[in-house]
Image (cartoon, rainbow, N blue to C red; front, side, top):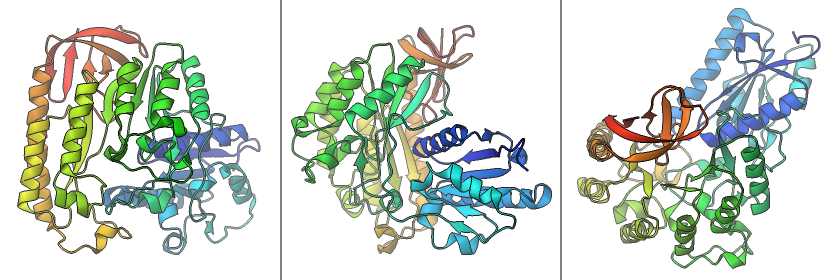
Length: 456
């Protein structure tokens, strides 16, 4: 039962940083409504599970978490209400209420700001209703700088979602069907949020969306720019104009660029990063493959020559740039020749940060219907071979870091990250205890251990 008339709410957040922001927004609205948050599910009157459904592994984790919560409720807290939110609810809005009648309510991506009144109505009911389905089709919501939000990241680092949704036709991806069309915030809105975060002591601002390089382009009179032609930011907001505005904010902090798409990089954006000292020399740009056959089948809007030329221009234009990327192996129709081309590309390009995903066949995507599905054992073999290649390259790269001086941001006692390391996904720089958490420090690398560095 609610404590002193106030409802106690627990929240489990699954998936990526974009999902984490949705969880932070829900908590912000719940606290604004006077509800009490608890980290212990067994103490919650209402438990929210914010789910992910990008690939099979994420779907399984989400389903297992929901079923585990249902089992725990039946065993020890029969009056608890369970709400399932996020991408799983949005993607399977028609199926889930029938498959999981034990869940009290399902909400989608457009309901994260109205979760408090939904909880009040749910708790007020004398009898358990059938599963309530509040999910609406084709999400349109995007946050603003004044959106209530309680950050779940450490005090010194934060994410800003600069846009929502995606317009890309990638044949392996379900995200556009889940999160809707790309819709950008304004430069003014993002800058106001960044100013608030810097004043609160944030030292690292991570810009995220499904495609950060498409920022502002959806507002250019409905005309999609040619990926190969230069971006003219005078037409309206663009990522370049945003980065320059963020760089002008007073304070000592990093601006980190995540989730870019190769099709929308321009010389102007490269020049902007080079000229903005607060923008980290780090770019996350998933490439997915290098074979023209695979890029075409994946509907990536680029080819191998374009990618090679882009990387050359980025490295020439941005000194000391660290490129993070991801690839997919075992995509339908991938031949041994395609895979060998990818391995050779890894050796040639020597990305500073890279990882490989085993292709996940997703219902509702174009790739699900393609012929030439690769046997799961072949996919696994290729994944293992590619990962071994990346591990070897990482060891060589870290060996060359010994003796270098680095500027690091301290995450925890004895642990920090350099400019080349994004939170959660990249390596750690181990440092002596005593350097204050949340502050920058200059260290010298003395040795390396796998993907991590040891410094003094």
